[in-house]
Length: 194
Image 1 (cartoon, rainbow, N blue to C red):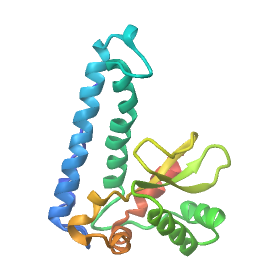
Image 2: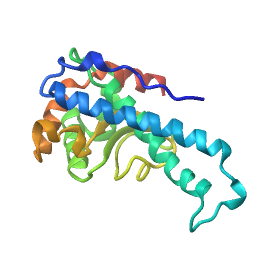
Image 3: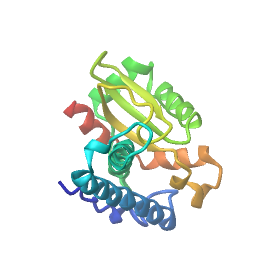
């Protein structure tokens, strides 16, 4: 199956605090992950499994990087999907789950920002299929740090490529811009699905 890049060009020029140059560069990176994922899967189809080896082997190396490209592609898709120039409101159900899990929406935001300060990678708000609560998890790479049985509600890209053009090393300023553009209607829809 060839993975397709979703068109998010409609976000260019429309997000508060995120410049065209920043969004265009970020979309280019997303395109690269989709391309690499397809390339890896194509090569895996013909790689010699008999030569698989922990030390080195074409199949082994492709399998080691497969999750990086997969999550890189799909976490970026989640990220751009949960941005909007006209953000929707949180559903009552999502609001209740946030309050039950974090105490209040303000406490949730404090935790989200603390997680963002703690990682050079991703922060994901998830709904756990284990305890039914919402959690914020940090990923140091696209594929390292997410416990199993989690459904993504919100994806926050904290890699420098997401904000360096606009904010340099001022990640807190980027987080404020991100939060102004979060489409809580999308997050609410994900929550309802799960």
